[in-house]
Length: 519
Image 1 (cartoon, rainbow, N blue to C red):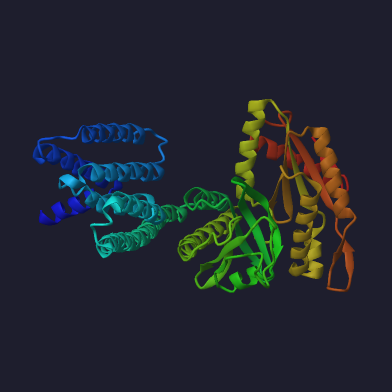
Image 2: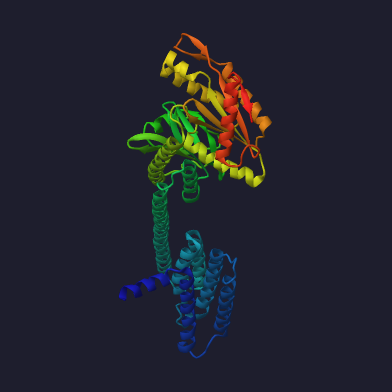
């Protein structure tokens, strides 16, 4: 408890306003005791000075309570009035035993403290002149040495006090700067701790996302909303020389790319993909680092590493020089590690999913996916009262090809044919391997006439292609027969539609092959 009292006391006297009012109190007490103890013949001039003191002290109180009061000049002006008051008090009471000139030792040091060293020294000079003026009539009876000693002591006291106050001010300013730095560091630490905890919690959820597009979206959200980056991007390593941009934040706007944007490895990217974070304080002075734009002044790039292998890069730019600190690099690296695991999980899941619906040899959808998709498209066509066509494709004389040239050639024909079919249809059309040498194409929102045109385009593409029997050797022709059936004319269920398209295919085969027939 004793320490708290001491602290409260020093905190109280450490405020210039409090010291100012203490001086007011001391001067008031000097007046009070003078009126109480002075000789009976009171000088009315002292009463006038007391009234003047009360008026300008009250005026100061009113003025400093205004919002825009200039405190330092006010302290200087009031201290000057105090010196004038003390001078007249000393003049009026000196021969009656008054020592009011001692109040100079209170007012002038206070002016040095509250209004500045120059103000204090100015008032000390004025006080010295006033005191010499008061004593000028007594020079004959007073020793010059006596006056000089008094003035020297007064100046020594003022200078010593001012030096102490100046040193205290410097120490206080230094201490305040230290507190500011400490508060800033504490704030940064708390912010970083909060960011790490938030990223840790958020990153745990990344591993549960099995869709690459959703992973990219979540990573962009974390970089923008949690880390506060307004310019950042996500790259994956396509090969040893190329990065693919999956998404970015630019001017606070989120951008995701369905087709990744390619970027050649050079400068900064080569170092990052080697597994080393890169933090550039000033891009304008960085040697060997290619600048993305003149608007950026600093950069932070960290590798995404999974199982000891770099799979991509997280990158951030800033328009402010030196925007990224050590702590930013650590946090970004934590996020990059979680991002690498999430991206790899999503990629593996996508590959596994593709293996269940994609034919391994030809790269088109398999029979199981075809049946599921045909059912979905028939329901959609029924709901929106639209047409839907199905094309069945069979390779002519395929068994003879296999027998004559072997299964490796047969596999090459299947793969090349699948590519020719995909090149002949729209992105919304579904190309599947129906089985063996048969392929099926689902054509949403397509009537029979248009479906026959698509079938003719496929037939022509295949007929005009030379298939290589041996590398750099014999070339041969392959033809296909195609059948077309349409919803709802030829059936309203997958089973009925497949039966009808099979009939159309057999019809094309029976008419000499290399034809398109519909039922």
